[in-house]
Image (cartoon, rainbow, N blue to C red; front, side):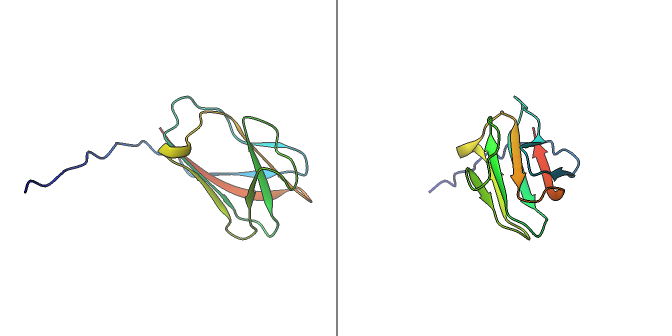
Length: 100
C-alpha cells in the first residue's frame, strides 16, 4: 500500500512582537491579507478579550485567560482582518507572532 505524503505549506514567520492592551479597544495586530497563521498570548495578570475585524468589548468575544491564555488562527479559522484587544485596567502585555 503506497504511503500518502502530505505537502507541508511553507510559512514565513514575522519577528515575535508584543503590544500593550488598554482598557479601551486597542489594535493588537493590523489587517494582513497575506496572513496564513497567527498566535496571540496573554502575557499579563488580567483577562483579555479579542475582537476580529470589530472593536473588542469587555466580557465579550474571544476570551484570553490571564497568564498564558492564547488564541490561534489556523487554516480553519483564518481571517485577514485587524485584531483588537481590551482588558479591565489597561497597560497589559499580549505577545504576537504571525506568518505569511
